[in-house]
Amino acid sequence: MAPRRRVVITGLGVATPIGIGIEAFWESLLQQRCGIRRVEAFDPAGFPCQIAGELPPFQLGDFIPKSYRKSVKVMSRDIMVAVVCAYHAVRDAGLNTKCIVERGEAAGPPNVDSTRFGANIGAGLVCADLNELAGALSTAADEQGRFDLRRWGAEGMSNLTPLWLLKFLPNMLACHVTIVHDAQAPSNTITCSEASSHLAIGEAYRTIARGDADVCICGGAESKINPMAMARPLLCGYLNTQDNDSPHRACRPFAADRRGTVASEGGGLVILESLDHARARNARIYAEVAGFGAASNTVSWSAPDPKGRGLALALRKAVADAATGIEQIDLVAPFGAATPAHDAAEITAWNEVFASRLDHAAALTTRGAAGINGAGSGAIDFAATVMALYRNTVPPSLNTSNPDRASRFQFIQGDPKDVRVGQAMSVGYALVGGQCAALVIKKVEG
Image (cartoon, rainbow, N blue to C red; front, side, top):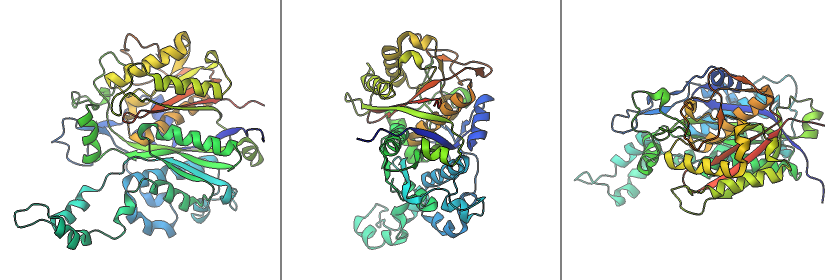
């Protein structure tokens, strides 16, 4: 069997409530900016939680070729976010993909073989546009104003565009990204909620390591800023409903007084390459992906295992895959959902696996600044972890100054801290479903 190829990170593309593009996002983390505020996308007055993390305004035409602009009409918000992240990722990596060449932004011809360019993108349950759907539903009402299935089949459905469903299939994020950038190697969609990004990055890592692709774009994206998407975590009791008047401090991961999480929108896509491919084109290398581990919480579909066994297993698998030791991890990036039960379970898992190492390793979470956007959350965390390792700087983590007594995480308070980070661990897990994943990254040596 051929030896496993080394895999490195050469591009980071993010869209977050505190900035679009890796430099804007990173600067906001350093400056302790918060992107959580009262919802503006719709009137949230009827919801007990009225705050969220929304993206800054953007024009999708700035991220696709002119020839592709007609396709925007079949893009949901989630797809648009993924397309924005993909553009930033390939630009950051210095890849001249089909999109970059057609936009006239390439210094030369394409520098990536499309048949060796893969994609693994995490997606959530893409929610329908209620205004669009309600308009069609209203034409299927009977004389008493009740929904009539026969009228829906005969009249209502005809008031939706024939391509309507293509906006809401989870695989359409990867579909549009791979078409725009002409990525023809293995492609997959991961739909495991908040664990999706880490699982997608892990699968891309393995695809390159075994030689089935030279380059992969991977991560995830999702928007939770619509009534249907916010209703679900509300019904599960995950959202903070008590701090509408103080949105900047509403999401408090691992805090003693945490009251729930905050929904948001955004995502991140990263470029992974084989080390040989990256060096051959003289690419800037952020870090090396050293290990990946995945597991599952089998206790409940909606509640975490109080003992954190799934996450603990994923942590151990990632460390073993990286052939490293706990004592060599200088930075940990826990997920930090900020719900009482999930944070308690995560603390238990980290304490069991890392024990006293947590007293010495720096810690980082983006949750207080950006909230949770489902499938895209993990990629945002991963990008922040990569930047901290690459810059040897750990930014402060918002709303972590009042830690749970059981927490041993060493979050930075106040100013960013210079920390020599040789290896780092980033994790993600699904609030519903229980999937867990962990990734180890390290500086490139040799």
